Image (cartoon, rainbow, N blue to C red; front, side, top):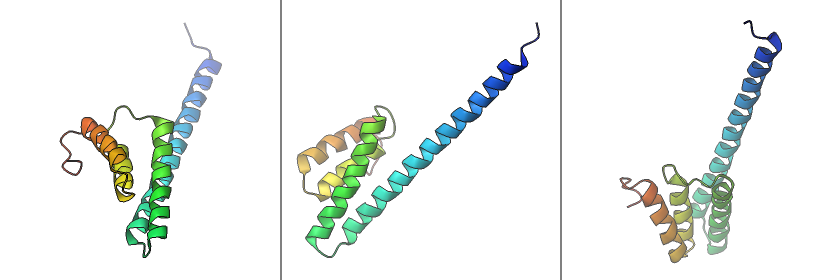
Length: 114
C-alpha cells in the first residue's frame, strides 16, 4: 500500500518544526546561562558589597528560574552546583548546603562539588 503524500509531507514538516523549537529552546537556555555566569563573575569582581550582592542575587534568580522551568531531576548537577555557589556567596549557607547535596546526588564523582 502506497502512503499518502500529504501524510509524509506533514510528518516531515512536523519534524522540522519540532527541531526548530528544540534548537530555539537550547539557544534560550544557553543565553540565560551566559547571563547568569556574567552576573556571577561581576559579583566576584565587585568593588563594594552592594554591587556584589546585587550581582549574585541576579545570577541566583536566573539559575532558580531555569531550575523551576526545567526541573532537572536528572542530569549532571551543574545547575544545583551553580545555585549552591550563589547561595554560598550570599552567605546563605543552609540553602547552599541543600543544593550542594542535590548536585552531589546527581554527580557523586564530581570533585568540584565535593
